[in-house]
Every structure is written in structure tokens, then in C-alpha cells.
Image (tube, rainbow, N blue to C red; front, side, top):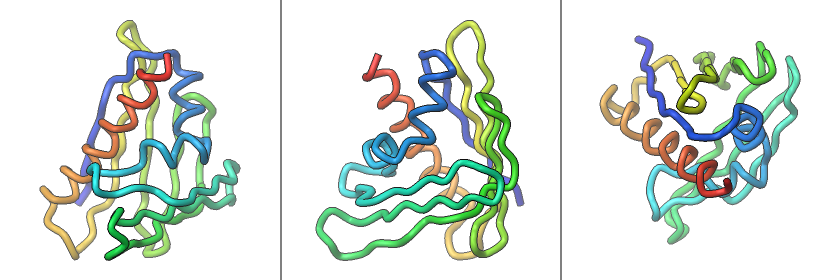
Length: 136
């Protein structure tokens, strides 16, 4: 099943793209709640290049790596990547009059409910929007 989340970011597409693809920025916005954070991030933004983010609970009780390989990139428009388990994620950047709508569409996974997955990914995307808008 495909799940989609989106947010509109009141910023130029260049700023949105840069914040999405820069490790220092990713470490600042990539968390679903205040008790989590991203401790490291790498990005090799090219087809066949890889990315990874280490996400951890701030109390050190749990953590995981989120990593994949870029399969399609159109600057300022879309990024597609595959995860290690074969799931595919498409991130679209659509510039408009109110800013940039960022839409993520991804394959669900069997461990968490669809609603949990949607809520988690939406929370991270909302943090992203706040991060970009705060930097303006």
C-alpha cells in the first residue's frame, strides 16, 4: 500500500531543496518528536548514491539507521530512493504561490500500522517545514 504525506513550506524551492539534501540541516529537522534526534546524516545526492541518517531517542534507549539509494533525481522537483528492504519513496517538490508543497509517497511496512506510519512521517515533514521557515 502507498502512503502519502505532504506539507507546504513558505520558502523558495532552492531553500527547501537545500534543507532536504544537506546533512547539517537534516540533523536539525529529522525527528518525529522532541524526545528523538538525528545524530548523524550523510548524503551522496546522485543516482546510485546513498544516504543515511542515524535516529535515536535522546535518552539513548533505542535508535535505528534510515538509509537508502537514490534512483531518480530531478533538481528542485523530485527525489526517488529505495530503502534496504526494497520499499520505494518518492519525494516531490512543487513550487507554487504559497511556497513549495513537499509530498512524500512511500510503500508501507508490516511492523507498524498504516496510521502510525502516516503520523510519524507527517510529524517529521512538519518539523522540516518549521525548520526551513525558521531559517528565513
